[in-house]
Every structure is written in C-alpha cells, then in structure tokens.
Length: 247
Image (cartoon, rainbow, N blue to C red; front, side):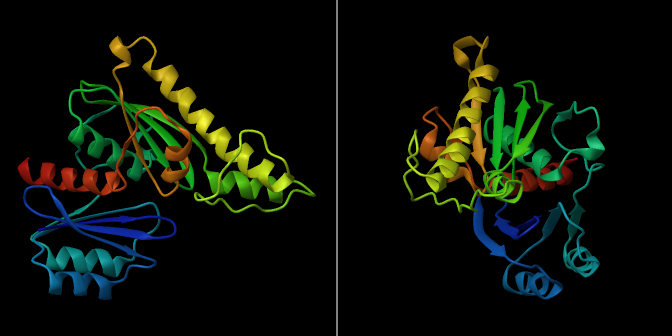
C-alpha cells in the first residue's frame, strides 16, 4: 500500500492507494504530526510513502515516514517525474501544481490538458499530449477576492461565499453585488481560459480538469465540459511514487 500526503496552508490531505493505483482511503487533517504517521502505519500495511508540502514540513514527520517505509520520497523540485517540465524557473513552481499535472497526465494520456485548481489561489496549468508541462498562470482565489474588496475599501462589507446560495447575473443589493461580481467574474475568467486555449485545436480537443476546494462554485456557473477530480494532487503524488519505484 502507498501513503501519499499533500500538506497545504490550512489542511493536510492524506490518501492510501493499493498496488493497482486505486485510492482506497482518504483523510483530511487540520494538522499532521508524527503521532498521525505512527497511527497510519500501525493501522495499514504501508510499504511506500511520499509527502509534498507548500509549507515547512515538521522534521519528525519526515523522519518517521522515512523510518517506517520501505521506500520514501520527499517530493521536491529535484524529484524525477514522468513529464517534461518546460517551466523557465522550475525551482519556483508550486509542487502541488506539478503533482496535479502528473496526475492529470496519468488519468488522460496523449491529450492536451488544462488544469484549473480553485483553492486559495486559482491556477491554470497547461500540458501537451506529448507530455510537456508548458506552464500556467496564477490568479487570486474566491476568498482572497472577497477579503481584498473588504480590506482595501472603506465601505464594502466582508461577504462569505456560499455554494448553496443562488448568484444572480445582475445583483439588487451590495452584498449580492460583491458575491456576484467575484463568483461570476471567476466563472467568466475560467470560460475565457478554456475558450482561448481550445481555439485552434482540432475539434477543440483539450481535456479540462477541475480540482480544489472552491471547485463547486465553478461547476455551478461554468457549463463547459469539465472533469472534476478532487484528489488530483494525491493521484499525481502516487504516480510519482510509482515512477520512482519503476526507475
């Protein structure tokens, strides 16, 4: 069994994969410690493990995983991946973005791909069907846009995004106007990227993956065909771990 850990700014996502690459268990932690590592290894027959983080990883977590695993990978910019990374500054590329790209390529080989990750930031990343990661763009996420409007203006209230609340095209009050401006704006942004990147391709042939905590807002307002995969980064980490094993 493979243990894959994606440590983000506010939470840690953990998945267990079997030898066929099937995700069999999934957990979310507000914080992830050595005690959690020990518990996972005690409960499950874990042989190999990998961890990726956008923050500083607790050394005890790394040491514990390394000690308990037959094979351990600390994912960084030097880790070999089954893609050609054409980013001009690979050392500055977010590891979650790279892992998501690997995951998308594994799920949909030999197709051009756009990955939209709607989290704290919204990232747009592009892969070619030949296996080249071309790069991508970073934009403020929904929560960041809402908070910025409140913080950088004198009178606009702080509005919380709610995926269950209808968002009109034209608002009738200020709170509604803020929610509609941000969420509809993100939807138009997403549709614009999809349209621009599909232009010129035969039959508009580009697979579009959507992931991230704010994906439901996009799904509610973008009617273009989107392939939603909430565990795309974890799938990518498992693919990287398998690639490391087979090299």
